[in-house]
Length: 95
Image (cartoon, rainbow, N blue to C red):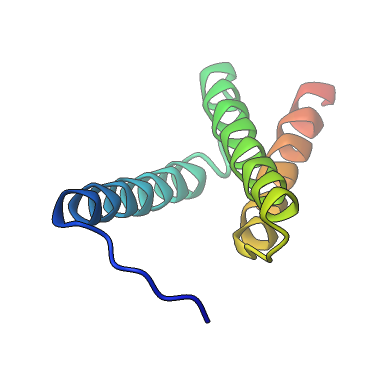
């Protein structure tokens, strides 16, 4: 395994990004749960936006995995959430 040392500034920035992503995932999950049974138009728009973000996050992990020829398995968790959210929004639009 390749080991390398990052300077303190880079480590601090990466830690900050890690915590921002964790907070984003937590709060978007709370929005999903809160709006699960609501069929209001504004709720559907929020769910659709969050679903697209999850989908794009997963695409970025797939792209980085292909480019670096290594597995970044986060897409396995993010892609189903995005797809199922979009399916749910489409289902409510049809009914």
